[in-house]
Image (cartoon, rainbow, N blue to C red):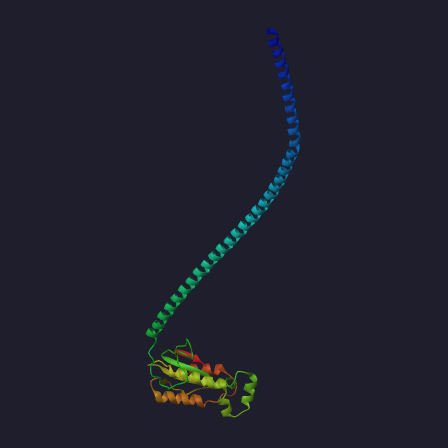
Length: 271
């Protein structure tokens, strides 16, 4: 009985050894087979990672381009915004200038209105003229000239040069009749000035008219005329109108007659 138990133990030991060896061989085979199939998978994984890296780099470049483009757009928008702000400021400045000009215009209009009222208020009263002169008036004929004085002498040039302005016209009219000479535009203007002076004589004054060309003569027979005497003033005007502009000019002769006035003149007007 003891011998059979020993033989059975040896057999079991042998079977264990064989089983262990076979298991080890199978394990080695499986490891080798697994290792052999893993290499293509690793290579495939590495290839996929490279493509992903390339795509990521391309995406990064695209993003950088987009960032740069966006930055440029932002810069352009900022520039446009600054330009618009400058335009708005310029518009505001012009608007303020326009409002200031409108205010100045309004003030000027107000001052103009006030000046017109003041002119109306201080305008001198028109007095009846001794000589009726419908063609001229103090306010629109001899601006700035005021006839004044106690004894007023009017020295009137009626030489040939008083017919026209141009020498050729003077010579032509000199060859004409007395009526042609009296129609000269310059002489007509001289007569209107004399008429205007006589019409503006102040009250309580006297007047004498001295006509001169080559010679001189005191009109109205050398006497002073009272400015309030309409008959004598109109007679004096008639003598002036009847003068003929002819001959040379001798102002010295007119001044000599002026000194012969008695009493002496206080104010002198040379026409």
